[in-house]
Image (cartoon, rainbow, N blue to C red; front, side, top):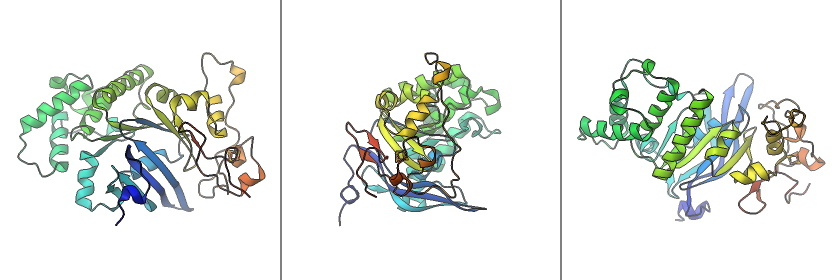
Length: 339
Ligand code: SF4
């Protein structure tokens, strides 16, 4: 029998391989496809940024990597393969439970509100350990606390103090750092950070970004960093994947995305970001409204808003093609499809 690595053409340096992943939700008006036939490779030890407008499917995609989907949703098709051998979406419940903390962990959006308000931080570490570790019930509480201390100090918190606190006694930045430390308790190799800085003030955002960058340098952990804020990714990501209406439209090293964007959506999105250097007249909003995700446009989903749209764009969905240097673009301006 062919190995998953061979069957799905996964390079050895890829830690998470996504193939043909489609996630849908039943909503009152019909079926909403939030992730549409996505292929993606996340390399071991990299920070991959996943960017795009709110509602484009970034969080749904990230959650599906751990086989987490809201109750009205379902994974319609596709594969998520970890380390070339673990077929995540086929794991039985008990193995999946362990996988989620021991191999891969997630810091959810709004994680600051994820701490149980009636227990102290130390109890969160015990609960997490005993609920998810490999039945290692012999591990003493003092061992767990010593690991928790180390992690809290790694995210630059006063561990003695923080372990005694309840969530309402901490600032937003402290809660975010505590949740990040908790996610690292079982030493996962892959960490998903879903909008980790979105509800923080600008100074705390900067601080958390630096801290995550340091954490990545110290541990070499693979990270998927989700945000709608491209400026954040400029500071932390090695590569950026751009999502538009449930599809990935461009993936490239971070400098390529900022200095040599290829997809019209990426270019327009970058042009719409204000900056100190830019003349106010150079800032252009994205043209037109976001199409209805329940009835997305045929062909390239960006065609109703694209200044370069051609007849083929209305009929044929472009595939991601490599335009050199690991820069992938899904746009008929760059590739091969015929009408
Ligand atoms: Fe624009 Fe066509 Fe490229 Fe889509 S495929 S982004 S419509 S040029």
